Image: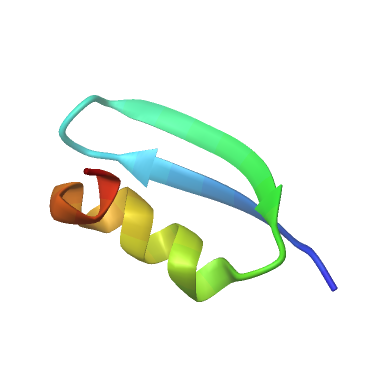
Length: 37
């Protein structure tokens, strides 16, 4: 099952929309710049 999300970045003052089969991993990726490397 996929989840549709709308995320807001206070740092960039920007909204991100999308979908993901694993919302927890997606939120971690959005919140933790170390996970992007």
